[in-house]
Image (cartoon, rainbow, N blue to C red):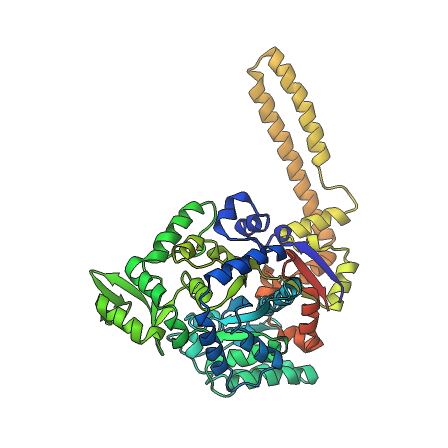
Length: 529
């Protein structure tokens, strides 16, 4: 499985903030704790040891054992859960929505990055244990973001009414979608495996949280992955003091707002609210508001006095759900975590939160951008070679790629840069003459220069257009190839479901990804299957 790569910064698919983060620009350094290098984990371990409440470990292990009660798990996962009770054990965590059938490819990349980093840390720090955690976003409510996946250009959508948190939804009604998907898969051993994966996860009318756990466990359980659903009363009981402070002091709003003022150079990823909490029941997830001395549940008639909501917090902490601003804090309170692995958007909103963590006296984790990759078939690889393309070109915007390729293959020169340079040199001499003769001529010289440069540019465009027509057939092959590799002019990993490649190569897809992806390497990996 030969590889090639391009840096994230040079790929054109990452924001200026992420590029600055990866380049460790000084202006961003105050917004994170430690940059993700293997050496920086030594001090992160020490800080977390001092900062983490060890009493939380037994609760975490008990909750995990209960959540895995009806699932067959590997010895490695079972051992990892048990290790969490030990004070020398730490976690590396990634989080993801409960996308149907894992959603886009980067679900795999996140988890593989997490597992591989734990393995590398164990080699570097053998006296400590490191457990990979997949934090399921069970308390999310945006069903339209997760109720579909793409397979070979077709969108498979789970049509269902959804209220409340997605993790508590049942998988009832998926049988029809399963039947349609199975027809698309065809026959063959890999198709049979995909069908089994889908049916074993979703066919029993279980909760979406349990279905996603089954699927992720089937794919990654043999590597020791531990899957956590934090929508749990015992876990949230540990978070009660933080929820209380949020209700009464608006701590995260005050601190995140100050941070955003200092990050004005970049687009805002998420805006904090006065209270960054939701109220949840089985079919309800609504913001908690504070208006005129009363706590109100948005879009309902439910209200609480201060004493009333604090009493509810003590008796039923599971009714309180942190939003995107507070969820990271909740994670770091209940887990002995060292590092969070996420995409560019996730890392961007974590960078808003360091002062909030400091206000709550909680250790801020190392932030690691997940691996990114493009999977390439052998046939596509042969096309790339035949069309004499390289990956720097394929990552270009399509119009730029076509223009560059036309100039490369055209039999006549259509880049007039040399002529423009020569023209500017001639006009610099005319400027000198005008300056010595009559400065009123300068405007006329400047206008003539602009006119002639414009003329050259128009000629260049006409020649380019003519050459595009001449090489139309070859350019169409280039366009079709780039569209295959970058569906909808976007990254493959954000569009395509893993099953499309699993159908071709089977379970070796997972093992090959483990062989090639390097979590601490900031390069976009190209994997030829």
